Image (cartoon, rainbow, N blue to C red; front, side):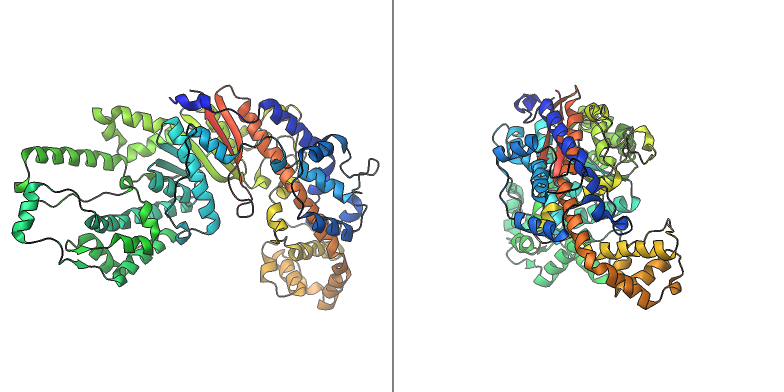
Length: 624
């Protein structure tokens, strides 16, 4: 199917991945206990005394002095990995005694300092046979998505489009598509046929409405922009125009107010979910845009006002047919137009939208072929297959696909990789996971149930043979963003402090009652510590009148001097986050490398970690 696969060479062999996993596990064997300590038990369990042999001021001082340090060189990294077995911990008590050594070890075992990642640009050059040139994106996506999502979508879509070109297929399946931003961008910017599958009907319905509105209003833009770039006309048409004295110079132009209204409505259409009917002013504008035959819209003005319209591909819209009387057409032109109309009717049934959102709960055993086949039948694909001219094209496009997932939560990310391996029609995969705390772990001592018979971690036989597990609190720590904390986007220490002191109050006055209810976002609504405690007790269905305000204030005054302990401890957790995330991601990469059907697999940093902390993607290609 795709002959260029032989040009792609894994930058990290399976032996390198296994060796790296062993090194990370050795470090985490002693340090993971810090990540697994729960914040709510910080004071009730006296966590600082249980794990630390240095004062919190020392930890904060060392961390502050090392945030501006340059990356580790190979010699320093090697000495840390092989010669610093305790990694700053006491061999006897297991307490942390050397903060600097611990931080160096954590940095050495994080993905940027390990020989396992493939550079994104190098991968793109390989996919394009060494001739890759980054595409100039004219779309100002911040007009309909935030800067973080825009950053992710533009980079991810370019890689996915490169995978489809490399595999010579046009269909993409987006698992956990959410609101459909990636799907819409792939279909409109790159002309790909995209299926967006999400378990939330609210997400898929909103994505469908957004996509429908984008297509509808793009038609109006295309009609008016065609006036600026008219099609070639026949001699008969030119003769008629001369006879009528019409050179289109006296045609009126939509005023700026109408142009602003059109682009403003498009912005709202992209940001809103399901809609009912257009308001009267918008209805008037719609009528102007879609029915007027004697007005033109300056394409440059519209593109300046809303550059998103620039990227709508010709395949994403339906261009109007020229309104030339049939009497003026030659027999050949009549026949050509008849064939073209038949083709468009058939195609419109099959391709009413290049992006098709649908709702389905996906597991590792999900038959994507059946989901998509059912949807294609509803859209009229059976009609198309009956016509010989479309038979081969439709069958090929229906099955051969690239599977993608942008920030798929919990077990959905590993299940995406399992589906890729199990389904021969899936030729490539690009998976960016998130929400590690929602992963199920096969060997976790907590005794959680197995969801659908397949565990989220570990995936690889290499890790499963060692019965390795992290623990939920450690996986929660893996979601922390080291880079953001480093640049000053700090941890919510005060809210964590409030929560830990609340647990002390529950122990002292309510018999350490543990309610199934969660405190949730009480902190954001509280005006003070006293207000927080009262609101939290009420949410937990406990009698808040049992405690006086003065008693609550006494708790605050008692533990406030120890708030630095919590700040220092959580910053140590942040330092461990990349190591735990690296272990999880390398397990997924190792899983792909263990498969006979894969010809190439890599772990690639796609995004800026400050803007998008879950920035690594697992990429895989099938053998031809």
